Length: 119
Image (cartoon, rainbow, N blue to C red; front, side):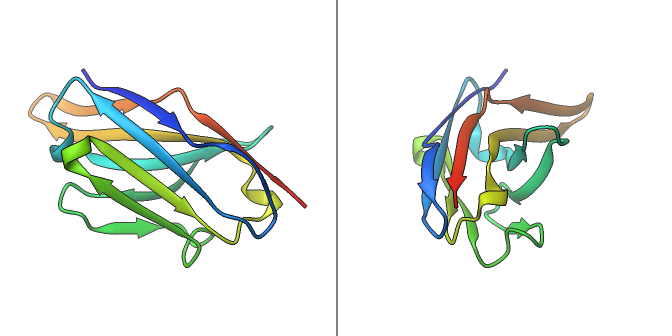
């Protein structure tokens, strides 16, 4: 089992920055790929980006150049650095831990943190 707790959300003006954190507990954090997703009101949850256990990152087009995912395995924490924020970035942001094991795919979610970008 992995427990994930996000923090760092809040209200920010358009063009501003925020750093979200996700602290993991309960298992070996470093072996999990860590994802950030978001869900805007009335919309489906969508992927923002991922950082692998090896530290490689990948982002959806809307996040490229503005968002950066990093991880600190010593602190069991993954971060989402967001800059040049836009009102359309308003959403609940979730972190997600995934790992493939013999029996299948392990998949854990945090409770989410609200990000609101005002115009």
